[in-house]
Image (cartoon, rainbow, N blue to C red; front, side, top):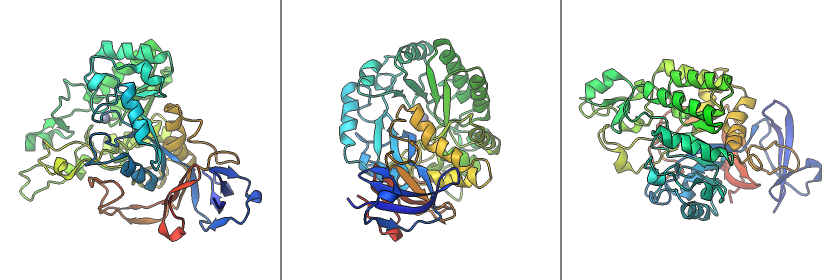
Length: 435
Ligand SMILES: [Zn+2]
C-alpha cells in the first residue's frame, strides 16, 4: 500500500503536525517513501470517534439498517468504532448471539463492539449469562429500549459485573411514571393530542436509585441518553461522592427541543411529527441548557448518538404508535460543533475527549481507539474542516431515512475517516478512494 501523507493538520491542542501513514500505523513523516500527499492543510484532526450507543439493527431489522450500512454511516460521521446495542432479533443475550454479531461485523467500515443484554430477552427479570459473554470480550451490558427497573435484579447485576470490571448502560425510565405508551415531554401537548406524558422525574428517580446501588456495590454505572436537568444534578452529586458513574448525552437532546415537533398535518389532528418521537422525549430550553453545561464541565462524559434507524412504515404513523428513535451517526459531530464548540462551551481537546477518549475508556477499548496521534500508534483518525457548512440531505448512508437533521443547515465537517490506515470515508474532492 502506498504511504499517505497529510501535511500541516491541527491537533486538538492546537499544535500543527504532519501525519504519515504506512501499513495501518502512523510513521515518522521523515520516513515516508513516494507518498500520496493529501492536500488538507489547515484542517483539524481528531482521534477516530467512538459511539457507545448505536442500534445497527442486524440481525433481524435489516429493513432499517445493516452492520454494513450502519458502519458506513458511522465512517461518514467520523466514527471508527461503534458499540452495537443488544436489542436485535434475536436479542444479544447469549455467547452465541455475541459471536454472531462479531462474525457479521467482519468487513464492516468501523470496529463493531457487541453490547450484551443485561436480562434474557430484555425481559427485566432473568439475568443473562454476563460472565460467559464477558469471556467473548463483552464489558458493556444494556437492556436499552427497556429499563432494568427491578431493584433486586439491578443490584445483583452490579455485584456480578464488578468482579470483572463491566459496566451497565442503563436506559433510565421508571415504568410507573413513564409507562410504555409515554412519549411526550410537554404536558400541554400531551393533553392536546391525547398522548401519554413522560415527566423528567421518570428518568431522574432511576438515575438516583442506580447511583446509590453503584455506590453500595462498587460497580460501574453508565447512564444512557441523559435528558433532564435533574439527572445532570444527580450525576454531578454522585461524582462528587466518588461513585463510579458516567453518562452520555445525544446530539438530538443537545439541539432539538419539543418546540421542534411541529404538527404533521395542518389541522393538527394527527398529532406532532413522528420523525421527532424519541425515548426519552425531546425536552425544552431549560433541560437543553443543563445538558450542554453538563457536557462542558465533564459531568456528562460522552456524546453518544443513540442512532436508531427505522423503516419508513414504522415512522409514518400517528405519533402515539410510531416507533421512537432517530438517526444520528452522520451528523453527530456537526451538532456538537453547532451546540458546544461554536458557543464556546467545549474546545477541541474536549471534543476529542467526549467523542473518542472517554467512550473508548468507558467501553474498555482504549488499547485501540481514542489513541494519541503519535508515531507508532494506529492510523485511526478523522480529518475535519469545522467551518464547512451545508444543508443536510434527506438520504445518507443509512438504509433508513428518519433523520431529524435533514433540510437543516449545519456544519459538514468530515473530510476523511481512517481506521487502522484504511480510508473508510473521504470527501470525493480529496481523491482518496475508500476501501
Ligand atoms: Zn434507550
